[in-house]
Length: 282
Picture (cartoon, rainbow, N blue to C red):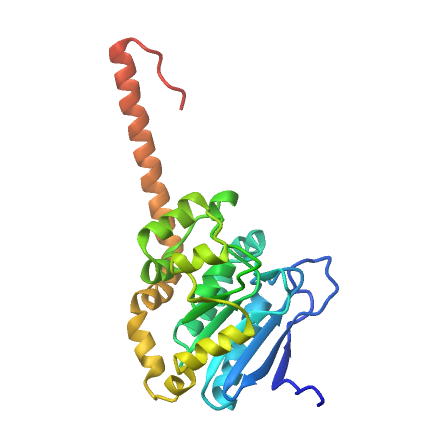
């Protein structure tokens, strides 16, 4: 039999792939793995970085499925075997004042409120923003033989804002989340399943079996699926919607942190004078 053609293909605009040295064109390819089960496979070499063009293409793919195809289940995965996603292009992301509020967070809001079940089929590494993106799906199935899940912001000195944090607070136990962020722990598949980070292990066959077992295609037919998710995840949605004011909040926290640090130095200097020790250098 000839191969079944994809339902649609969206090219990621040139120059937006994860490495400036890569000449390969990125794309999102939508196929149908079973009746009303849509597989959205992305490839943005070398490691599926969440660039503005990647995010907008992802968003458009979700729109096309909702508006043009019968209701069903959306599986997202990577056609790059080593990576589901390696997260942001961090230096470029923090240099772009519109990236978070205008690109990344709208994609995450679309995922968390999507009016059909969504499953991240994690085929390889999902680090930092890549793991966050998987967490904004309803379910996660992980390759048991390859890849780690990790929030490694601690390793490269990045902070976490409320939009990034709330999805983990809602979906995971606090001990697991603490170990993720304060130890930058890398979770292989079996440990990720034990900690409740993923819902199952396997690849395409296991993901389809999971969808069938929980009758997710049937669940998608209800008119209230999306609105129920909006209430279920209202804390997460609130943090996304309030993210526009986050820079001002961070600035205020920085000022307060500096004030407290100066007060601490003053107290230590007063103690030093009292015991005859030298004062600290500011």
